[in-house]
Every structure is written in structure tokens, then in C-alpha cells.
Image (tube, each protein chain N blue to C red):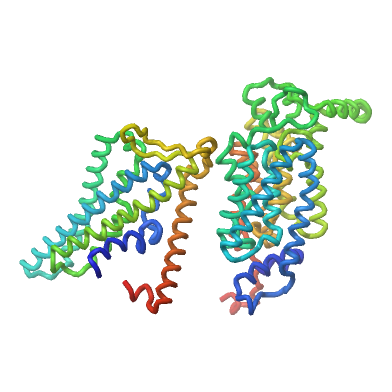
Length: 387
Length: 241
């Protein structure tokens, strides 16, 4: 557990580790390996900074989908805090103030479709806190990300409700609200074929892009790209800013990236996992993604895949969860690659959701193994050391 | 040991599913509906009790022949005990399978492979192993009574665990409680609003393992509380029993 601290993984991470170990030691004599940093205050700071970095994307969801999105977020956070409070009372260990339950609840809410029946975020948050986190001993001893555990529970339990979306603000009246991924699935299943990228395919099958998208794409094509002899398909603007049906907090990739950039700059999260995760996924998706769709090699449309679903939120905010991801430097790289491969298979070959939540949960299962096999060892200086 | 101690031991302290964690395959697999759990328990009790009974009688007969022929005891007879026990278990399992098929065909289809698998259920096999190393028989009547108590206790303990798991799983996972029809009662209780949108994750096998884990946890918690109480009264659990 200490290798991470030695490898210079940022002091916040060490704070969590020392705190979780302090729980195991007796309260009077807290024996914990160096570095002796932190305590409750730093864990609180860590969680608040993650929550603040999630907020812009969540606010975008509320702006886009209105009150239903706000309700989902509120119920997710409220239930998580309540569950943490109640289990804390039952276990005799109050941890509700460290802010981790709030982050869990917020992430659950952000992964939910807006307008989902409110018992779904409530059940997901409660499952995440009670079963995934507290039953295994609380923060620092959960082997699975609580928010994702809860969301996957909801995905398996209420899969219909979890794939019913609300139309985004400014969408054409009366059009069926489909997330780009499900629209793509429908288009491939029996729609019209089209030349060009996946966006062109969606456009040919009548995907309701917003009017704003039409104006921006026409302007860019007419004023900028025509000079270069290129053109953007309809929907590029909607996909880029996240003006599409989807989860409350996952649609806006730029705002998620802003939050992630702050966390990266403060060393709250490290670059290894998100970078290897996204790069692996994009490479595989671009190379082989077209094959299951019958579009041949190198036609996967990696940008479309990158901007749809919960990939960016998962890669920056959930795969990097210090408790459930590997701690060693090489371990993080291997972990990211594994997640990319898993996500590709789960997304393309039928799993509930967009493949990201399940892929990260499976990665969580692998994390201890990865840690064990990449643990830095003292170099043996001779035969005696080898023996 | 009081006469009923052998029976109650299997119910709680040595509950096969919740405490010793054996016979878990049916506990995770056929607890999706309460009626399945009920029939599975009936099958296990049937096979376990009858197998143990026949086994004890066989053992007594072997002991009698041994003492008659004055040969060295137990070393020669042990293979026969194992063989005999397996044959008994298979016979009773097959009979139960046929009884189900004859009278409750729906249930037979629903339980599927888990009925034939009773023959190699860990609870049944564990009883073989436990009885194989026992002292030679002295009092046949007492031995029979004891084997009936023990196997009956384990069987009922298994039933309690299975029914507890299936009640939770079916209520939350399907929103119903399926029993058998009695008179005007159709056999299925709807669990209020849950039946509109049940948490189907619990109806999958993973949900079974989850409930199993919490049952085992609850059993350990109760055991610890009981141990603490007995300690407070000046005696540990081991001394008491």
C-alpha cells in the first residue's frame, strides 16, 4: 500500500491510505507507516475538490434537461448521505462528514438518465453505500467503486428505465429522444446505409440534431472549412458540446475535461489511467470498431465513440478512484489498457449501458492482482538476497 | 447432551448454509422463488434423513457380521460403507426425482438439474465422511435416533436458510411470493408496489450470492453476540454445549 506514496503519487492519496489504516489500529496508538500526513480534513478536501470538479458538467445536465435532472441529482446525493448516516450509526463509526458519500451520490446521479423514476437513483445510491462500501468496511476497504456498483445494480434491475432518455433543450419537437449510441444501434439494425462517418449515418436515418447545430455547422463549413476543402457532418457541434440526450452529467465532455484538468493539475488524479484508458479504447475502436457494424477496418469512428456515453466521466473520475485502482506506476498503465479493451468489448458486444460502468467494475476486480504483480521490489544485490 | 440437542445444533449453531457454508449451489441457484426453495428443502430432508437411516442400519449390520466372524473391525468394512452410502443417496435422490415428476411436474421442470444433484450435495457427503470414522456400533437404537436427529436438524437448518434467502430474493427481485395454491388462494402473493418495478438484479444468481453473504454475516454476528452473553454469565459457548 505504501508504494504509491513512495512513487510520489500526491499527498492526498497518502492521506486516504493512512486514514484507512488508522481505522484498523487502536484509537490510542495509531501506528501507521510514513508519510504521516492528513486525517479527516484532507480526505474532506479531496472529496470536495472532486465534487466541485464534477459540478460544471452536472450543472450543464440541469440546464439541458431541466428539473428532472436536478431531481435525479438531489435524490442520488440525499440517499447516499442518508445511507452513510444510517450505516454509520449502526456500525458506530461516523464517516458521513468525510464527503465521500456525497461524491458517490453525485456520481450516481450524473450517470442516471434524467427523468428516470426517482427510486432508481435512490436504490443505486443506497446499494453503493450500504452494500458496496460499508459492508466491506467503509472508505478505503471497498474493492469496487461504490457509485459504479450502484449504477450497475440499477442497470441490471431496471434496464428499461435506465435507457429511456429525455430530449435535450432545443431538440426538434416530438422527435424520439435517443442517445446517439442507441440511435446508432437502431440505424445499424435496419436503417439506411450512408457513406462517410457515423454522424453521417445518423443523419441519414433522421437523427434530430438541434437547430443550433445546423447553424454552427453551416457557418463553420461555409467560412472556415471550405477554404481547406473539408466539411463537418451535421451533429458535430451537438456531440462536441453535449447537446444530446444522455446521462445527467455525462453529456458535456468539455466541462468534464475542465474539471479533470483541475484535478490533474492538483495531482488529485494522475494522468496514467485516463490517458492509457482513452488511448487504448480509441485505437481499438478506430481499428476494429467498424467490423461489427459491417463498415470494415479502420472505420470505427473513434471521436463519435469518445464523445458518447459515459466514457470521459468514467475515465477521469471513476477509473482513477484511488481506493479501487492500482497504486503502482506500471500498474496504472496496465489497468488503463485493460479498461480500454474491456470497454470496447462490452460496448460493442451487448452489455447493459454503454460498457463503461461494467468495464471499470471488472477492472476493479483486477486491480489487486495488477498491484501485486507490479509491486516495486528491492533490487537483489547478490545470491544471498535472491535466496 | 439432551435428546434434542443433536437436532437444534443443525438448525442454528451448525446451520449448513449460513454457518458451515456447505451446500451452497442450491442455496444460490434455486432460491429465486419461495416454492422452489421449499421443494428443494423437502428433497434434501428426504434424501438426507433416509440415507442416514439406511447408513446407520448398514453400519450396524456390518458391525454384527464383524463381531460374528471375529475379523479385524472396520478396515475391511469401510469401503462397503462408502459404497453403500452412495448407493443409498443415489436411490433416494432418484426416487424423489420421480415423485416430483409424477405429482408436481412444473416444480420438477423448475428445479431441473438441482434435484439429481442432491445425491452429491455437500451436506449429504459431509454426513458420510462424519459417520465413516465413527466408533463401532454398540447401541443400535440410540444410534438410529441420533442419526435421525442430526440429519433432520441439518435438513431443517438448510430449509430455514433457503427459505430466508428466497423470501428476500423473490420479494425484492420479482415482487412476488410464490407458494402453492390452497383453495381460493392462487398461490402467488404480490408484494405491493415492488411488483411494478422489482430490482431484477437480485433475481439473478449474483443476487443469490449477495443474500447468502448477508445471511452468513448475520449468523456470525448472532453467534458473536451469543458468545459475548455467555461469557458475561461466566461460561463460554464450548463449555455450555
